[in-house]
Image (cartoon, rainbow, N blue to C red; front, side, top):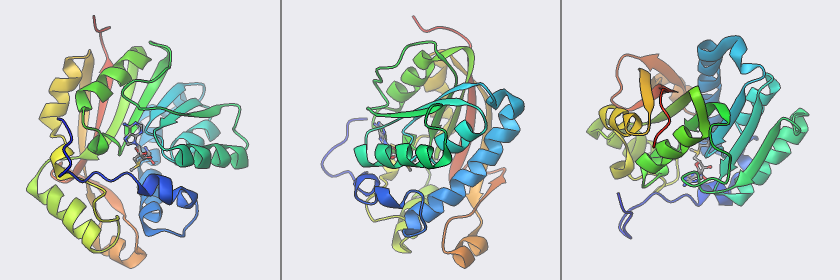
Length: 246
Ligand SMILES: C[S@@+](CC[C@H](N)C(=O)[O-])C[C@H]1O[C@@H](n2cnc3c(N)ncnc32)[C@H](O)[C@@H]1O
């Protein structure tokens, strides 16, 4: 999809408020911290001891909320993000955690990274695809970077009325996310994702529904997630690279 001027998808918050990735001073980042704790627990469940020694590429890594804890668990991580200030926040966090040697970051567009092909065991596209105008290009890049048998872990929003209402209208209306951050027309349906992935040699292993825990979210003042059967709002998908695209 080509972005037009009428579209939202304002990514300025990741630059303007990058200082807040790791502190509790901004509600959007507080929510992201909680959601990442949820995703990290899932990565541990999915990959277990394989995380130790794995090479991981975190595409759209933001402030490193997944990259840094994965490095703390023994992975070697490269994180890329388009926001220079977020990348700086990620580097600082890796330094504070004492994992700078195993956790490196760079500024780049995730659809065309300067990284070597077939080099990574695990690729992450965590809460980033909904910001990308060419989801097929993002998947192609993840597939290019993975070794054969490597896995892609992805979280994103579904393009449904419910997601538009909950993830855009309500989340922005209640101030959990700045207005204009998301444009629901960029959201991707699971079946579209499967087709885009298959075209670049990625087999879909599972799609898991997730949903906000409304009461817990309102109590905490930050987003709390739970696993559920429904993929109507947001979902996680896991892929394996089964062929090298021509
Ligand atoms: C919601 S944050 C998620 C950050 C991180 N993946 C996480 O889960 O904590 C989305 C991030 O994607 C980055 N981003 C959006 N489009 C991008 C692109 N085309 N290339 C690289 N980074 C991008 C933004 O700068 C932002 O840091």
